[in-house]
Amino acid sequence: MNNWNDGYVFDIAYTYGYYPGMNPARLPLAFAFHGLRAPVVQTACELGFGQGLSTNFHAAASGTRWWGNDFNPMQAGFAKELAAASGSGAQLEDSSFSHFCRRSDLPDFDFIALHGVWSWVSEENRAIIFDFIDRKLKPGGVLYISYNTQPGWSAFMPLRDLMVQHTQQAGNDEQALPTEARIDAALDFAARMFDTDPVYAQANPFMRDRLKILQQQGRDYLAHEYFNRDWHAESFARMHQRLSQSGLQFACPANYADHIDMANLTPAQRQFMQGMDDPVMQQSVRDFMVNQQFRRDYWVRGGQWLDDRQRVQALALQSIVLLTEPDKVPLTIQNVASEITLNRLIYDPILQALSDYQPHTLVDLAASLAHRNLNLSQVLDSALMLIGTGHAAPLPTEPADDARAEIARRTRALNVHLLKKAALAAPSSIEGGVGHLCSPVTGGGVPVDRIGQLFLLAYLEHGENVDAWPALAWKYISAQGKKLVREGIRLEGEQENLGELATQAQLFARTRLPLLRALQVV
Image (cartoon, rainbow, N blue to C red; front, side, top):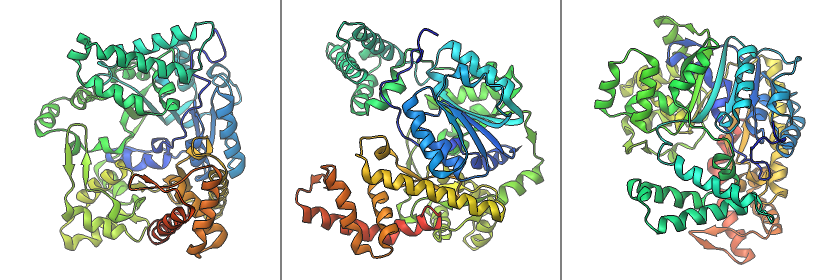
């Protein structure tokens, strides 16, 4: 390697997102839907964990032991702070792939995860990662890998390369600008080039809109997504060629929305694909059908197939729970090509049945809705759609009583730690950017925005005295020089802001808090 960061952006921290596909609790339903038996995950590892939010949530909210690395000391420091706060025992370190993957003291893993990093690292690091997977993934173990892919990136790649060339040229100047400023300059350069109406823009007119979207996105996201020195968009067939050498087979998409062809493909497209027996060709063609840009997949080493009876039983006994209030679940969804409208005659009764925010098995849901002429297959498809759109979650296997108490303690400790950071940190900082909290019920993250987090902090301090919540929230918001916005208008006066917070607090207490309490977030 030429330097410690090996061409990877390091002076802008990565975003603070939560990625549910890395939650092992999501494996049983996804695998059973595709006829496979999911492994019991006792040991897991994330390579390149970024801020480590996903790893820490999954370590705190389950009995799985997690390991992981990230080369950026600032990011790894934040991740280790969260691990210490929860007491999960997650073994997280700031080290290169070369150092971490060659450690002799690591266990073999039931689950290895890489979110996006495969697309952004050098060929040398790719070889190290591939060797690690080959040596350390157990028989029956699962690899989660997400990566940029073709054909969705084909039109954009030349523009991306040009902008990176511009940032590299600026970085070689004697008075080199920081990464954020160089990204701004590259975006401005590309916009001015488009103003001349190059033939590239004429041949790819949607690139103008793509560039406008980039100009509006956070520079922390853009830096890592587009401006690393190494950047790859790999076809599914190429990924299959690599991983099959280590005895891995494609299991299924990790993105639940991709399980439902009815929602993503036209009748003609589905009919065309039904004639394909080769799963590699089928996935490759599907990527063309949806113009795939980013794949999130599960691969398994030596997967075990379920017979029809076992598959139906596994699906029927899977439990799900809502993550969104029923009246806030949209029934119009944008898929890759158009909007689809979900059938109210199916979704309304299912959402009503789930509105108690308690876990329900799919077979119990189907039985309770039989009088509405709904069967297990319809309930299953609806559950997959709700999970895929982020409005529901599958549940992990019920832990033993002693483990349940410890998991609840860890997740509460982690959430309290994050709530305190949300109160003290500016929204643009690391801690202020955390938009999820941890649930021992789902084994993973639940969306909670910053205002909601401040209300939860007030709830922990003042209980159900909702009238006391606005003052506490305003104390932290105003201390950072921030003000609320209502219907696009910034509220200037303190009383206006307190009035808006009072309205929001009452709504939060009535609608969102019951759900978060049921999920044991607080």
